[in-house]
Image 1 (cartoon, rainbow, N blue to C red):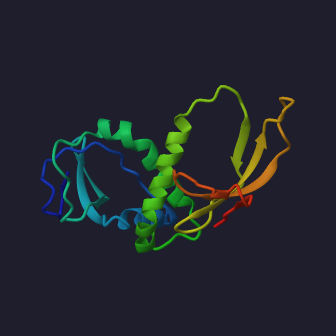
Image 2: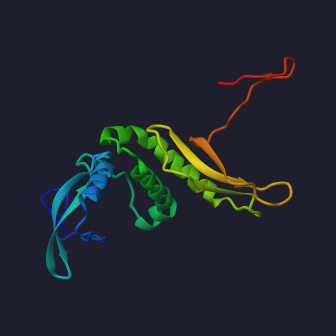
Length: 189
């Protein structure tokens, strides 16, 4: 791979995919995602099977510190791929799409929700106690509000009718409901 950028070494080797003919909408979403983290689009010349190909690629900022040690795609995929895809999917459901600076501000909550969903997906269940289906894309910028269709197990073992519910989508947290047993009152915030 060679590039106009002095950061990349002529003759370097990279594995990946070349996506030809992306639509303007696909490019708009890719541009949003990459530019929110400071990546910029560069013209590249790729040598594939002995033939040169002109391409564009998003490269990190020049001052980005890659950290110490040897980076491994395999190790990263095992630990981070699933939540990264989950977070990217959430970003691409935003409507309207935010500008890159707003997305960067939103990112910590998006990433935290993605990790929470991944942890929840790893839990095993022994019985089908409920059925949850997203009713529509989530809305909101920093926090998210999601509509769901829910059915839950009844005492007779059957499932309830489908119920439309909305939830405030946050991250893993401990919740506390202050209760005064002498006055039989709870504090709601």
